[in-house]
Amino acid sequence: MSERKVLTKYYPPDFDPSKITRQRGPKNAGPKLQTVRLMAPFSMKCTHCGEFIYKGRKFNARKETTEEKYYAIAIFRFYIRCTRCSGEITFKTDPKNMDYECERGAKRNFEPWREAKLAEETEEERLDRLEKEEAERDAMKELETKVIDAKTEMAIADALDEIRSRNARIAKAEQDGSTTSVAPPPDDADARRLKQEEEDAEAARKAFASREMPDLGEEDIDEDMMDEPVEAAPVAVFSKKPKEKKDFTAALGIKKKTSAPAVAAPKPAVPAPSKLSNMLVAGYDSDDD
Image (tube, one colour):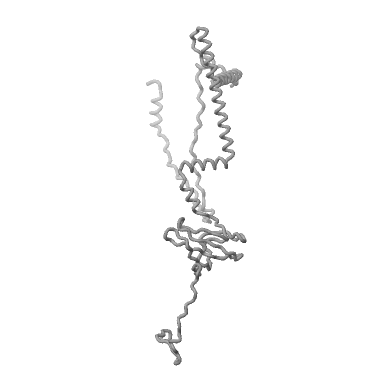
């Protein structure tokens, strides 16, 4: 670090400071120029070759301080070169509009002070201007407006003709001396509607008159048949049959033991009737007693 921090300088032994004299060169009589690095403040189009230069493109420019001033604010001029044809482009600051003004070599694509002028117009002027622009652009709307105006004029003319004819009828009735009130002419729409309703009613009546009821083949019932009793239909009776049980022993291979036939038990011997009992029975059956 000590090598980089030089506190003393080397003076040779034959160094004579009296030989060093101050030299003053001639002053620049023209404007003061300074080389600066800047970006294009607005998008522009070169008038020499037609190249478009977008806003923010970096240039090595020459900055010049002009003698012009806006109040006490100095105005600066900048010189740049086109990126395609190397044509010189000049623009300067504009303190009045707080923007830049393109002088020569290029044409600005968008100028914001035009929008400021449009903002200064009143609301009525702006509405009138928008209406005119829309009317110029929309030809169909203009045609529709003309058609509506023509219909309105025709309706007004018809109403005037009707009023004139009515006034003439009233004047003629007053000349004849009759005070009968002039009835308004019937409305064509009501007359058409009534006529249509009558035609629909007539068509419906004809349709129902020509329609016949179908023969359903019904029989005439006599009074004698009404007195006869009605035989009741037999009612079906369903009996519940017990479900037979399946024998699964044969399927499982199980053999049943056969039981021996049952021997009937001997009936007890009935003793023969005695002679005394026969005599008593015969005595009851005789008619002598």
